[in-house]
Image (cartoon, rainbow, N blue to C red; front, side, top):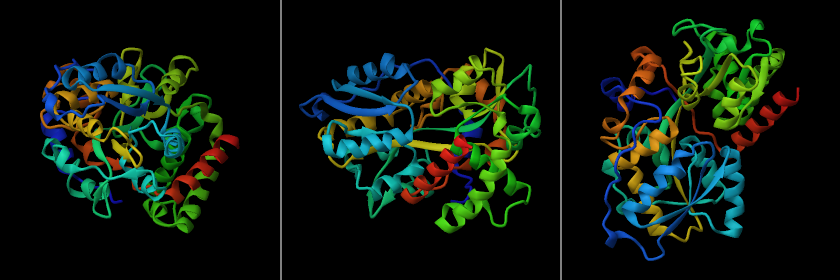
Length: 378
C-alpha cells in the first residue's frame, strides 16, 4: 500500500483531531423497533481499555436495549487464534482487528460480509469507509470490515531522560547505542521501524513496502532488518503486545523511549513522558469491526456497529481508546483538552507523513510472527 494523503488527514488538520479520554457524550437513540429479540451481542475486543466496560457498553445498552457480552484479548494474534477457535465453538459475533488484517482473516474463512443496508454508511468521516480504505475493506463485493477508531504508533519518550522534538526524533533512535536497556517496543513493529529507517537512509536493496507484496521480497528485506535489529537488542527493556504492558515498560521497568500507540502517549502525558512522530512518519492504523461467519446475533451486531458510527457513539469509542472518532461530528464531542495533546504532537507535516500499515495477508502474518520470535529469542 502506498502512503496516501486522504480527506481524513485534511479533516484532521482542519478540525484539530483529538485523542484521549475525553468527556463521554450522551448516547444516540436507536428505535427499539430496530432491535432483534435476543437483545445481546458477543464482542471480542482489546484488553487494557476499562472505559469500554465502565461507560461505553452501558451507554449502548441504554440506547438500544442490547447487552454486550465482552471478552478481552491482548493483541491481534490472540484475536485471530480465538476467532479460529470460535468457528468451532461459537459464541463470538464481532471482533475488532485492524484493516490491514482483514484479507488474512477472510482467507481463513472467519468472516461474513456486513449488510450495509442495515448500517448507516453515510455516518463515517470521509476517507475511512470510502475511497482507498473502502476498497481495502471490500472483498469479492462484500464489506468485510467497518471502521471503529483510528490512530497512530510513534515515539513515547521521557522529557527528562530523553528530550527530543519533531524533526529530530527518528525511528533510528530506538536502536542507538545510548539507548541500551531503555527501550520499550512491540517486536514486529520494531522490525518494521528498522526496515523503514534503513529504507529512509538508502540502505535497502528495494523499498520496504515491496516486502508486503510477495514472500521472497519480504524474506530478503526482513532478513536485513532482523540482523540489524539484533545488533541493538540490548536496548530492549520491555516487549509489549497490549496497552498494559506498554505502560508498564515506562512506569515499572524504566524505559525512557518506546515505539507505542498514541493511547500510551496520552495516558503517560502527566507522568513525565511525551509523544512525538518520528521524522520518517508515524505508523498509522485503521481499526474496525468484522462479523464472524458463524455469528448468531446478526441484527444486534449491526446495531452495535451502527451505533459506533454515530457522533455520540464514535466519540465515546475514541475516548475509550485515546484515539480518533470515525463518525461525522464525533470530533466535536471530544474533550477540548485532548485536542491540545494531539495538536502538540502532530503538525501538518507530521500528518502528511503518516505511514499506513499495508495489507498483511495470512502468509505475511505467519512470516512476520517468525521474525518477531527470532528477534525476541536472539
